[in-house]
Image (cartoon, rainbow, N blue to C red):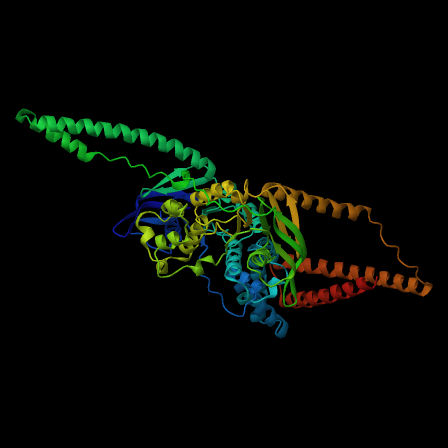
Length: 628
């Protein structure tokens, strides 16, 4: 499907990729792995032919269609969600326009015996067949399935796209891409703006995708559940592993150990050879041998082993005072924006040392309640803060409070205490600010870098309560592992708003689900919660099926004699209309069969007349059925 040949990309005076070759086949579900800056997103753009390579080529074999989830969304204003999603069917939309035009001509024209009229009849047959073949009669059902799966409601379908946030607009773009059924899907961080329900749905969709999928994601569990192959970008090369992410990590470690041993053996050989060269140089009779050895060393490809990942680092939070037993107490808490009630009558305690998660669909109030608890966001009801509680809050817009004039190091050092100052560089390194990067000005940092810096600062301050809203959004997998271990060792109280299942697993011991204006408490971790949700779904289905079987039908009231006579008359009329419909259908079928060989103008005229009469009879039948 896609063939990459001898790919080379230059960046800042050196190679990002050097002589890279691989093939993407049908059924491959590929995860791209590698450190931040290794070139994963660049490779996706090159595969999509959105960016040129300096060397080599990407061949789209045959008539392969490639879909790329771009981060640059440009919707036409004035369209609803349904209309924008429908733009995925450009070919079908064009055919539909032609069908509408042709039907209009057949309805308005009266020159039944003309060649032009006969051509319109032929055109409508060809167009409707083509429309059906391309899925025109099932596209609405497909649109509903995918839009519902990505978290949209039926009411959302009729809202203008400009009413939605950037994250929801990205979902619309993803829906369009999935509806287009490309041979190859290229997805860059597709789960970034999705909640857990939508991520689970997307996993199922991609597992059954008939084409090929290539994706970049920092969601380890998503990668494990979707991919069957991993391409690792390291040291300007691409290493191919026929495995999902977790298995790739194991295979990579085995490969690394072998490479380290090979590098050690090579270094010993080089050292020994250099000793011989120095020894032979001193003797004129051995000068030729020395030169020969020098040439051999020059031809050796030095084995390079990528620097060890930072994920082995362990970081601990600063010590803080011990708070009271009750951290938060919520009583009848509610929040509404205008007439829209987000949640109401929320009641729960948060005890010292608890680690809990807020989960649920976007827009259900997770961030709103977190802000009400920490920032005092306007709400109804009462939220009480416990004794000696010192809250550290990480918001999704936390990066906005950084000092633009300072460097990364200065910002972190200002946040640190005497106890944590010696950890500053280690903490910054864990969040991908290593070496000279700590001297960068905050003003030149990207949004993701600013969020990582804000997160690093949080680890350097002495808090006994942490409330964190989507802390993993801009972290790579290794940085997430460091943060997770630090939070596991944190002896304070933790509230996490997150859609990252792997991050929450083993961290949160209690789950609060936000759904339909209510906040429901689940004892246990994220996987127990998801299992309970799944079981509840099955129980609801079973309940509906049982009700269908056991619910007695309501007894109809007794009819009068006149009403009985009228019902009998209507049923007789229905039988007669059904006979007429069958007769028309039979005659139309005979004419259609005749059209396969030859037909007269009279036949065409009769055909059109009978089609109209059939439609009239079908309408009459529907009206009669409503009276029964």
